[in-house]
Image (tube, rainbow, N blue to C red; front, side):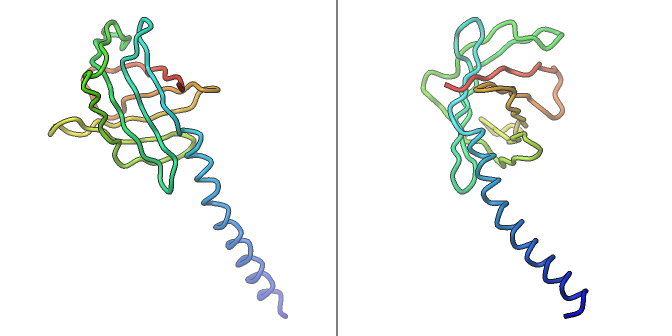
Length: 143
């Protein structure tokens, strides 16, 4: 067998092995984010992000109302609507160890978020994209 055929065969086997590994790696990444995550301000929960790892990561976000100062620090936070209005996250993607997704609660433009695991049971939720008032990342803890 000529060397180029051996190389082609080796590359084909390597590619098949690599592709077989990807679904498992994706599943592990999804499981890293799965769970119920809470953001608190002065001990009160104002934001709940519920993520499920199935064939594709999915979930809901129930944010409260926050007020921030000019530096982007939260100064006030109120829990989300007590009616329990959890709205689905949209277009979730895991890239580079971060979960990005869109979310909207009305006919307004979707808000863009990025979540990054920062430690055991801890993550940061960041509002990304163009906004008039920068908000520092919100610390989330897995319930």
